[in-house]
Length: 420
Image (cartoon, rainbow, N blue to C red):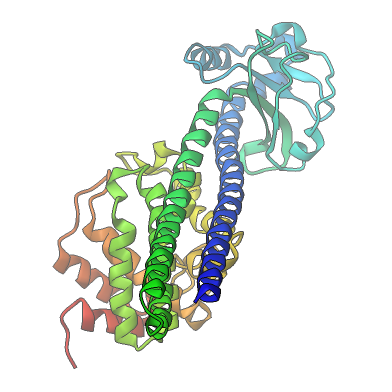
């Protein structure tokens, strides 16, 4: 009996230690990757704006005898508004050789600067780096933390790169957003770990008490430990739900969307006769299918009106971002292709890879239908929810174009009320 007690105590301690180490590792990896995603997302937004601003004066700068002779009043006004609003510290337009064509620090105009990353920006890449507050005259105080973004400026918007727009953006708001999102991640991971540890500890203590009462309870103890594995599996699902909630917490309009999508996907999967393992993978993917929206600015998630083409392209990146986040977590590897491809279309018009038909993973095809249906019947910032009957009819109408006809047929049986 004492040996059994010792064995149980060692197993419980080892399980708790493993959960703590796994939670810490997962938290560090996800938080670090999420920081990079948020910073890169903000940099892409800054780069788009900086390139657009350059068009206000670039032709004048290139046409004038020298940069000092150009009339950039419109650009001056636009930048002054951003600086007064605390959105920008400084701005430069640089030629291919580093010559300053325009600057919010006029004394620099005409100088040739050595700018790290200039060649990469001239090749079409958006370069992101931390600004050096001690060496850059665009920063008024040495204690200012700024994000430096070098954006390629193309002739006519899509022609060759002819200049580089350098923007210095205050880093404090980005840092606050990173910190807030990381707190949500740590809360979700910590909550799941605490619940799982509590479950294991409770089961261990209960088992030890039963061993002390009678030797004949040994067999019963084995049954209880087997049952505990199922409890731990259920708690793992709770961890996934908490991770999904980190996205929902940023946008009240999509709160519970992941849970609604999971329910519909499970019903479709059962109608298709998926195995228990496939259903488990599908449920985990549905819970986390929008985790990539962590990297989408809240201004786009909560926008009341229609998105511009550029804004919609930013939002569409969430499926790839979500896949990159999840592929860093070994026990979620099986859901990565489902999350990446849940916005592909049967006819090949989807994203991110434009794959067609049965080349799209089956579980991604199921998730696509469930996600679209729940999105239609949910309230969004830009529209009221669609009536359930209308949403069902829309799913059926898109069979063979947007959705797999076989998946739509299963959907109609379990959600649309159709019977054979």
